[in-house]
Image (cartoon, rainbow, N blue to C red; front, side):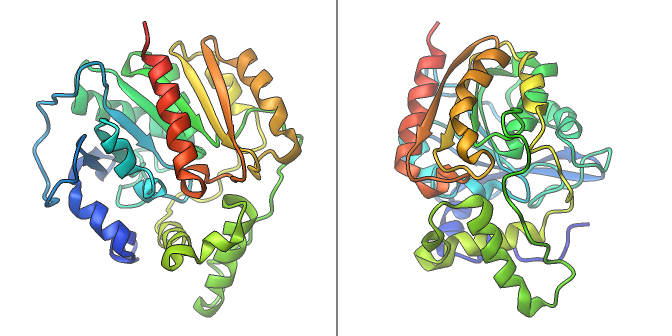
Length: 313
């Protein structure tokens, strides 16, 4: 059963609007459901009632665009990106990964990327049949995406990794997060602010911008994380998985990503060595780990350019 914490879509008007525009799809996952939100290409939709599965009719040459959020997150990690991507002609499918957001725990009840691959493969096969998607994974979602394609390569025609951890170039963990679950509620906000500034955002002023959107998102998401204690960030787990990914691979990072700090300049060489079909890395200036939230316009430009290049025969 999901914890009794608020859905972040009810916390901020921007999220409420996006949730209303989406179709909500629930697919079996463990003892419950895996939840997807879907926005079709083009103008904003009205209503948000659950809809039956496809027939899917994507625009010519445009595969479904599947977004996987980061750890302690949900589909709301993409709140500043969905409308721009649908306006660019993409149908957007954003999952709540098992154990996060509104989705049930993965069948194994553990939170590693490998545990997510099976339920996610089943979901994509059910959603799209034989149609390959364009897959975008942020942070922990990048690890999940690579684990998925290492075993189910036909499910995506290309992979974009955003703020991805575990490339083996930083000698140790580069950030220090504080725990909050053991503290009285009055102390939670200070910890969430610290963690946002320490890991997620290069500009702490964004924590309170737009009515405190970042803080509200982060708070609601971490409260619904049932899979804590992920420790892969300083490993080379992603680099090892990429050797088994045959499709084109692109990478996008904020220049100030706290996962790497001064070692960020070593990423491009690491990707070229790890991924058989690496297509390039984009570094976005004045952005931290949550790059798609912090610098959405620059991120959209980098993402759409990568997708366009990777889709060419």
